[in-house]
Length: 226
Image 1 (cartoon, one colour):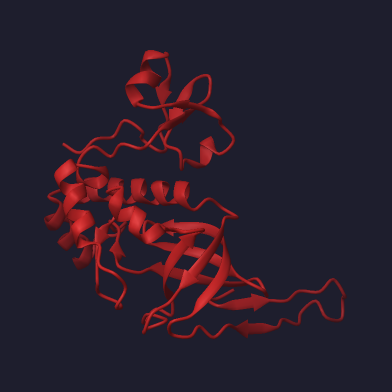
Image 2: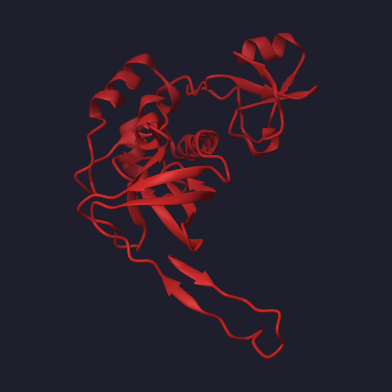
């Protein structure tokens, strides 16, 4: 199922091999309701657009997250952040986990486009909102994304990035979260897929370690930039 397409399936043997493909038109300066299917990386999500549950990909406007690959853009990010490629890939993982906390699977969201509704990869370019909170803005404010104005006339987050750098927040230094979830053995970043049903919280990793817990090997709650 490609971007912006809905696949219809039937249990009728005569119709089983027939599919219906629809593509939603996304207008400039439009507003659309959707639900989160999954986070792809720190600036890209997969959603189900209302009302026909058409699946599409959203590229968050005005932000750029660390890359998982090793192309020229990733090399530029390494230079900008002052890290090696291995560290960049770890930061990419942590930004995606942070976005999963802000946008859990099934979350109801609102999308807002600007003058350019799709990029050259056919992804919808949008601001993503949960009620009144702009997720694009929060990613930069929390220190888990870089300000980037490459696609559209969305608001600039340059000042928020500068503040995050100075405070060494997120990928600019500490990689800390606002709290950590825990089981009887492990503690996790709040966006970790292994911690979705956990309710025990610790404010810091030091508190979790003091309670005799070990860090999750998947979400790396103790990771710090060196």
